[in-house]
Amino acid sequence: QVQLVESGGGLVQAGGSLRLSCAASRTIYSLNPMGWYRQAPGKQRELDAAISRGGSTDYADSVKGRFIISRDTAKNTVYLQMNSLKPEDTAVYFCNAGYYDYRQARRAESWGQGTQVTVSS
Image (cartoon, rainbow, N blue to C red; front, top):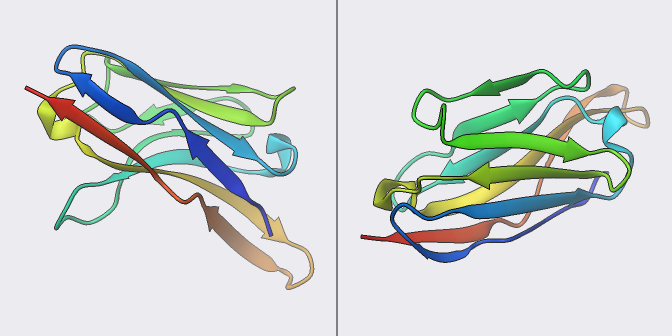
C-alpha cells in the first residue's frame, strides 16, 4: 500500500497560480506513473498531468502550457504548478500513483485524499 498526501490547494483569483504537492510514503521511483487528476462537481474524474518513472510527462490539452508536473525524488514528492488559472479549473485535485503490489502479485494504484482548488472570476 502506498499513502499519498496532497497539499497546496486553496482559493485564488483567475489568472493566479497555485502549486500542489503530493508526498508519497515510499520512493517515487517505485511508482509509475504518478499523476494529477481533477474532479469538478457533477463530473467524472479526469487526468490533468502525469509523470513516468523515467521523468517523461504528459498533459491534457486543457492544461498544456499552463500546468507543469514535476518531482523531487529526494523528497518523494510530485508537484503540480498551476498557472493562469481559470474559473473552470475549480475542482478537487487528486494525486494518483501506479505501482506493483508484490504481496498480491498485481498492478495496483493509490489515491490521495484530494485538495480543493477554487478559482474565482
